[in-house]
Length: 519
Image 1 (spheres, rainbow, N blue to C red):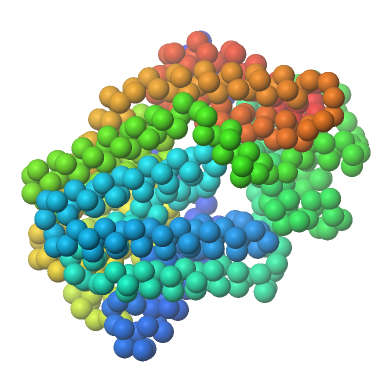
Image 2 (cartoon, rainbow, N blue to C red; image 1 turned 90 degrees about the vertical axis):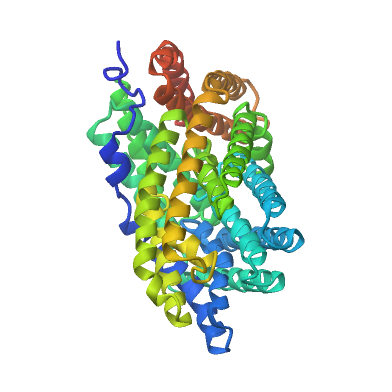
């Protein structure tokens, strides 16, 4: 038995897939338009009122619109408003540190690096425990970093940074909710469509374990979306369509298991299989107790401090760039292989990105063209951020460098060389950290995850209807966590993972059978 021949075993992505895959770009066009609009509206108003290039700082708050994508409008406003407040808080903290640190000096950069480390560690723990979607903690860190640097360099005042961030966040909320005027159930319909496509893919290859997990995950994600929208249990088109997809999934799984195919499932039986989204308190309670959290925090702390320290020691102009490079690679808690690929993406994307900056620099002296550039770069970032990291960096690099100075203040050649050197330091430190700090941490994470799956299965199988919904929600939560753990272990150490695979395979079959009422 080998990793290549074992059905369902996680397979490492190839170089071509990592650098060139762009599946799902079309689905993000609407989000890109909203991201661009969230920057363009306040920037244009600010420009018209004589605020010039400073109006581009609204992009720091406009990042909030990204977090609302794919969520139903009934809860989207809460998410965008919450992240908007988080971005304003990060801008306030960053600008405050920049103000207190005074002019750029070794002591000032140490303070900025300490602030960045604290922000990304706390934000990454929160995002990881809640299992939030991309972009995770990255945009929060970017907001704090740029705010500090803008004030530290004297490019903008602390009140101006906070004010424009707040304006951007408020506009982002309005932009995020505007599509509800045209189709108030658009996100739910799209989630149902994705679930249907995943079940169709499984129907074509019913014995593929990976496709089965994707189909079940997409199904429950769609039910979560309907639940958040308040449509679960109502006789409306999205709910009826998802019920049919759910029944089809049951039939496909029964066929794959050589079981009797149920031609009809009652609404009461189907209702037992549909799990409302776990509450924030539940997800925090289940997520914070994992060994994955201290590993993530330790690696981020070590990498940020070391990368920033090296950049200061060799007297580079922007040590914060080395810190954010390391943090961007590590903030989602990747395994060693995925993290190394991400580091390669960062290098390739940054080199191309600074090339893009070199091309557009001549136009950045005009406030109008600078703002238009930020709008375009913001849209590109939204399209590719969760699709292809290397391409995303082509947009993120000039966006961050442009906002960080509101047009480069140092000579272009020095800026290009400096950012590439700082990127190399950050990438190198991040990769070394992945391979040397808790190098076998994935083993403890996997074994802990599997133990939690066993506990959750036993709880669901226990007699008595009391709190059955919460126990089933926890089982789904633990199965998803274990799926992530097994992928990371399989990528990092296939030989060891193969020794654990039979137990993992058995547990997941048993757990997902309970969730779909099979067996």
